[in-house]
Length: 188
Figure 1 (cartoon, rainbow, N blue to C red):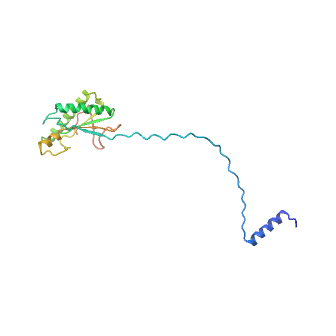
Figure 2: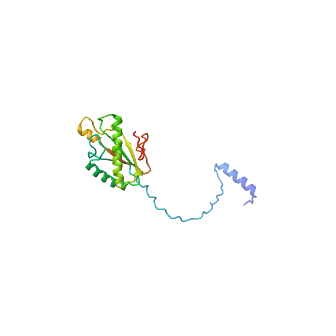
């Protein structure tokens, strides 16, 4: 066997590779550095955000007011007491008290009458322990009937006050409808 020096060996190997059609590759593999292993405690699943109750609207379905009056009838007073308990369960949310009338009479007079009715219910709520700062008054007059004004029964149903308990942090029923504070007596 013939002794070869290193350059001759490389030259011979290169010729062998070319003649046989083999391809050879060389690579130096370097091991990746070992990373330290750290034990991390598993965190509990985060609790889902609390469910928020959407606005709750209460309509005093009993006949609350006589024609052209803002004083609550006895059955209206008992409904207000019942609603006061519901409102207290949802404290400290804002409560909108919206007065409505039938369509008999001048529109401006009906707005004023609906406002007086809303304030009557507001005062009854305050007498039942509701925080006056949480109450907002709205007066719609005859503009939002829930039924026809063509019958006596329909007119009685339209003489109503709607109470809406808003979501936490909300101060108006819907965008675009201005609200008024309890201390202010401006009709919409």
